[in-house]
Amino acid sequence: MQDDLWEALMTHTNGVSDLKCPHCSSPMVLRTGTLSNKFFSCTRWPDCRGSHAAHPDGKPTGVPANEKTKAARRKGHEVFEQHRMRHNLTKNACYRKLARAMRISRKECHFGLFDLEQCERAIAILAK
Ligand SMILES: [Zn+2]
Image (tube, rainbow, N blue to C red; front, side, top):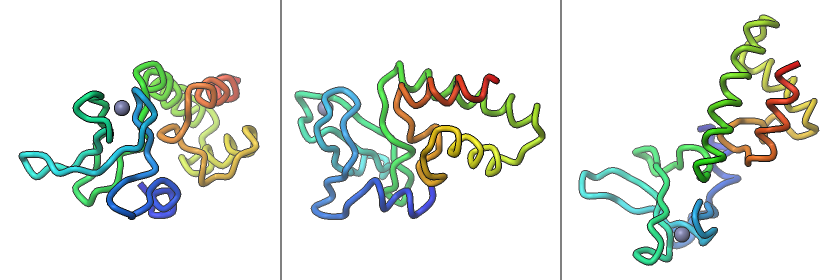
């Protein structure tokens, strides 16, 4: 993940991130697991077991999502790649095109950041 995206997603105060728990929308906190792996867990743990993977440097892998959104993101990636091949676009050019069509900035335009509704809009645009 790019640093600018990271800055938009995370504040460094007390290790509590701006990430929202995919299950209950509570804030999430960065923790270190037994194998020194980093991950985010819901601040309501153990009442809520919501978690999200992090890179070894503590950056989140995308934005947490529930299963339905994860499935829509996977589908979106597929349609994105097909569109890209069909129009012979680089990944970046394809994201720029999609961002324009969705009226969002290129920085916000990534399936890892999209919610369900945005995924569906992106898929509708890319399927053309
Ligand atoms: Zn939670």
